[in-house]
Image 1 (tube, rainbow, N blue to C red):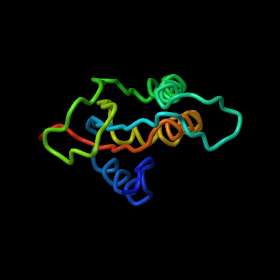
Image 2: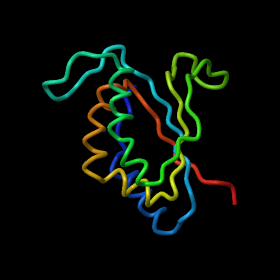
Image 3: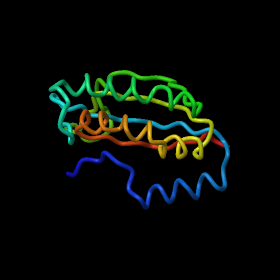
Image 4: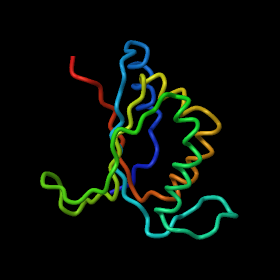
Length: 136
């Protein structure tokens, strides 16, 4: 099964349409599997663990996420998946609230955020990102 590390263009288009019609807060559910050793696409980065590379991403994207109004609601280690494929495991789960889908998309498009994503891509073996909204 292929890894999922980036939002495909067609899914960005769906998010853009949602953002045009909806201004309510969203919560992004992040499911992440980390590499044992980070794999950087660019030269010049010292070898480190996937956890260390993800910490770099978190630190370098902190300011732009804060400017977007993002709030970490919860993060933790995934322990067991009682419902779902037993062979699929996640190392980390995070719930991040944004004021709106537009706030998320605007943050995602900044140069600062894109630069920080270098570390995220190096850190992750696989991921899922689920955009959620409160029940009406």
